Image 1 (cartoon, helix red, strand yellow):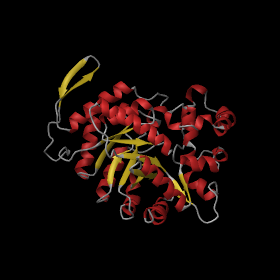
Image 2 (cartoon, one colour):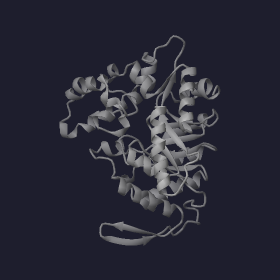
Image 3 (cartoon, one colour):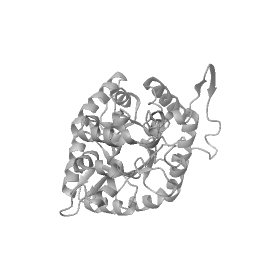
Image 4 (cartoon, one colour):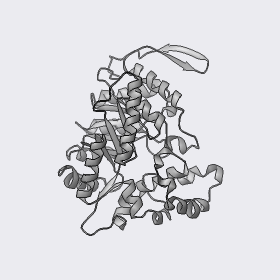
Length: 352
């Protein structure tokens, strides 16, 4: 099992990563959500410059935000700064689209985007379409110190719905998920295998990353203590944000009494007009709880949405996920970054 760090992109993330790579963490993933966070590639460039070993990936880049040659040259530039330790994670879009009131990218368009980007990263010449125009394009200076195409950049596909999960098996180099049930992981691996079979591939040891967060409980501490809520509350509440969006990221949250309370007591009283309500729902997303949201973050939501528990409980959950096929668990860090990193290193990684 590998252990990673996940970040809402911000330029000073590297200050925590220099600690993380000395404490057993091997990968860092950065969220790409232009209306919420800093530019993901600026953040990764600084991380690349200040680290030596930790692998760096978009977690995940949203294709509709940038045309294929821009995504390819951006990640290839990071690969120049961090040769051989650069990954491209891509997804159809959660907050990168929802914060502008837009739905996820259609699967067919998503496939075409990945395939064209991969060909560019392979140094190939591709037919690029813009409306009714078609033009052949390729990188003109791949060997002049501007980008690095020599070290292959794996493309990992974020998927929580069935069609994109199959696509991950068919054309991806790895899979990224936000749903943490071992049973769900096993079911999703059946879809990955189905997609792989369609392409004539065998899954084997398929890289599979779980994006989560967590808090190691102190003796006698509850999972809904003020310290824990401060640590993981902003992550846990996202299940309810996703339920409001009817997103696959919600998992089973939309079927819980907690969601109905949140919808009827909190969402219904938001001041933003209904046609722009997404602007208020996603404020603070994965960073902080908005006033009043804390009362919907109970022990069940915290434990279900994050890796929170005693060190023994967290290790047992990770081992169950590993048995189901997960190969990396990435813990999101926002507040108390170094404290979280050192706690997880000491209490979980060192004892795993």
